[in-house]
Figure (cartoon, rainbow, N blue to C red):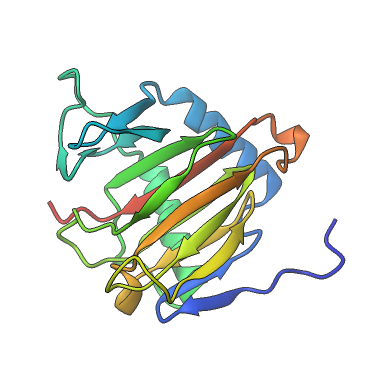
Length: 207
């Protein structure tokens, strides 16, 4: 148990970290939902490299660097559930302390990180909408590197994201470079029943 609560903070303009946003029961329900979505796969990049995270997409399928309605084998992408959109609106309202009725995410990328997986610095820029990205973390903690919209170099801020944490980025930080240089294996609560890290990012495609 934490001796002192972790405070929420604005990491950059429009980028807000809300620790422990999801209660433990909500975390377990979300882990169960992630297990029910079939088809996790490592994405192959145009240069031939293969990402170390495994991903399943809801609503739209992300492939570098565009969205399609079918996954790589031609089968239809999994639907985006309405309850996940409601969760996204609640997250955005809490992070920005304001109404979020007009936030309607229609795509989610669910990434699974094992003990050695990482994510290079990148921008989320395939969406045609400038609406914020809502990110939820489950399982093992990670180092989340949040940079600037101009390039992959400094300035950036390293934030430890733990299970249940919420991170939202929009406005001036919507196109900020960000990534996960490392995960922290063995840091999840055993009762969660998850080995590794799950990250859900909700976006508005604008498509």
